[in-house]
Image (tube, rainbow, N blue to C red; front, side, top):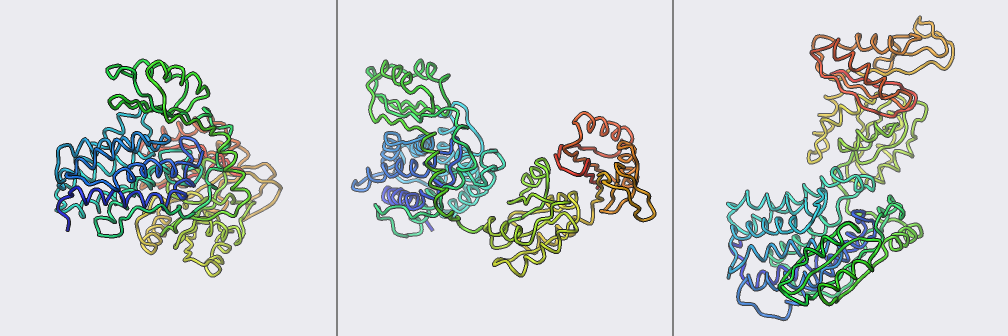
Length: 541
């Protein structure tokens, strides 16, 4: 067990980290959809960190702080892209946290990680959660809360665990990530760096390699974003060598801030590192030259880069990343309903339901898409359960079907889902959960008929309870309240209403206000499900 980090060990940790990131940079590139889907986050982070690794590889150091200082300076000068600059600030903070330390203890390293987090946050004018910043924040919190880990190895174990927890949360924090079905690229790149550092702690190979990165995935995730969605088209970055070291970049920063986003202006002695996404790079350069001479100028057209990514992805078969342990697939119709399921942790929503039942092939395609060893399927309709169960024998991975017959049952099942839990535990919990919810729905009759001694006329509203017709009425409001009254009893605590695409927001809100008055002991929630066919889905728990 490693109790302290000396100069040689820290140097080896940096070299190993550079290798690990470089080997995986193409996969990190494939995740890159935020702040713009230009597919270069992994490359930029690798180039940034490799510049530091190459700088220290043939040098000898007498103290850990000297290594950290050299890495901080090299990453700042070699920083590329938004992610590379933020990465340089994390390691600048680590350097500050190791100041004057010949060897670094567990407590020192924990404090340095926290300093790295603080420095990175301070460097960003408008910090965005769901990014590399979130991942380093979780890691820093884990570090300072576990200074009694007893060894550097033990501290790294908890840091890596919490870093991965944070990474898994990033799609819930950034809509762009959820839309593309990926985690944050910068956060993943940071974890590869720490994995490499951890490998050096374990005594694994730390020689600096110039081998090209192995392609692990295509850039298919970027296809979820259109090139025209990129508001500021030119990634502009450079270094200013100030004419007067005492001058500050404050006026320059204020001048260029309104012209773009993702701006980072980092001062370090006589140099200023600048990164901004803008539509007017010429203006930015004109303002910069007033402060000093410009070096390492790089301007990339991100819309052009993104168009090329889409073209390449269209012409090449997609490749997948590492398989997940567990994923959930749900059937649903309506953007609002689909959004509820994804918020609860569903990996893939098959669009379908009543009148548009997905086939076994559709379900198998979804199973392949989620790329998991174990898959849970929520049919959410009695007519889809059989097709889902047929996928069990046909899939190449382990598939289990929860026999949910309604959307409310599927949503309630997902409230019991534990991403870190085992397949069996989740199946048991979800099966138990669906027994605790009463499901209702309201649709309309498309023709005259008679069912269960109920005369039904075209256009009548049908109040369904657990999939069976309970009420028939030509008035929607009366059908709604009759169905609710039939579902609520003295043990009921929660009423949730999902209104369909044909129900105005105001009408749904008015009905729910009336429910709150009629059932003061129940919590009433209303949400737009945008579902077709059904005016309302109702859950009573």
